[in-house]
Amino acid sequence: MVTFDSLSTLVAPYAPNVPAFTAANAIREAARDFLRHVFAYQREIEIYVYEEESKYEVDLCNDDIEIVSILEVKRSESDVLTQMQKDNRDTCIGRPSHYLGTFDRKIKFYPTPSKEEELTVTIAVRPTFQAPAIDRAVFDDNAEAFRWGALAILKKHPGTGWFSPEEVPYYENLFLEAKNKKAEEIRLGNMPNNMKLEIPSFL
Image (cartoon, rainbow, N blue to C red):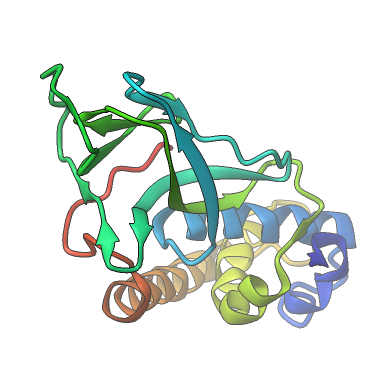
């Protein structure tokens, strides 16, 4: 993990005398925005399903990250459930073959499970508003994007040595380009099952 308070050098050359606290807040905000749209921060969790119960809470047990979206559910590498685009209210019972991520941060299986089993869920996450740190690998892989997003934020701060509203569109465009590039990379190389579907976000 790398703490946001230690990342001021990411923007300091472009924002003279920016305090570490201010830089940390801007970088965290940029990371949250970036990772909301680009599923580059992923975690796997196990969900144990029970007979005749179709809906389950997705619990990270971590106060520093929050769920953006459910990306994949599988029994094994060769047995992957299909994402549903809308709720199927049929009460059929059987071996789940489909899932739906609901907006209350729960996951619903269809058909309703007929027996107990364990499933692996891949989720996209992002830091919370209060997160003190971010995964080192995620930061290293997306540092440039976080820099552009943070600078687009910092350049809007009036009364500071780094205030420069005329530069904001430039950094916003760099940030958008970084988002689009990473989103394409995720879709082509890293996105698990259903990469061509519209994957609903919780946020």
